[in-house]
Length: 295
Image 1 (tube, one colour):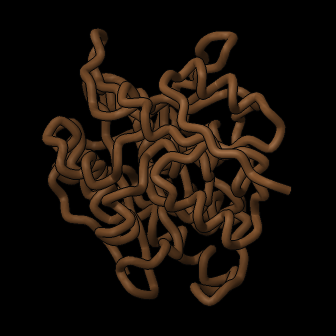
Image 2 (tube, one colour; image 1 turned 30 degrees about the horizontal axis):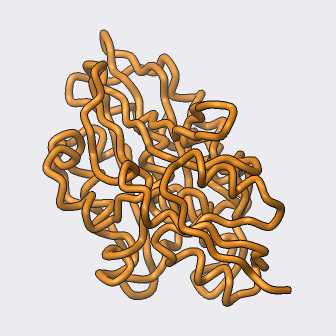
């Protein structure tokens, strides 16, 4: 079967082309090439997004926060001072994506749409409460990043839909974020496990807790363990009782569904999620410029 190739000039044209059965969007090409060479996809048509300039860059939102164009590369985002000011751990995460070659061409939209559970951006963006903006011929809709992936290499995207941007909301007062990526191989390898936690602190209590796990699970998702933090006491130093963190860690270890591979056994990854949670919780208590954690 032959494959057609199109380079639309507008988002509307791209969405129309993506309605065709077997059509795939091509952004930076990193994930697309991997999927193609592994035989995960057999495109009837390829829709290049290269001409859609409106999907690049970072823009401030009127209500606060900012919007990231789906075609923005990881390299561009790690160098954007607005992102570093908003949350230093977000810049740290983009700096840790793949290697310098991947960061030069790989895009945030392509990364999220590929939905590889080993990828870095989704857990932290989900913990920040970010949303993806999806466009089609019927209009726009938004989906929380935490709910965008429905499984490994599967998302909520329907034929004719295009992920156009990621909206990162304004941070309410008292917001705390912690991110941890653990690796057992080289520093440019996939994570063995990653975890991000986010919540709001008010009057010594936690509200709206979010915990997302990457790499060790079938896909990134909010765990029931986050509910154990809801309403929990937090002291003046920003710390939660160790006994509660241990209870949350137990719930996470029980809930995740890791696979055994060369990065570690199932038992190892269940233990590792406890380490990641403790380190991420330490980062929520520390200053925004706390150093990253890795193995």
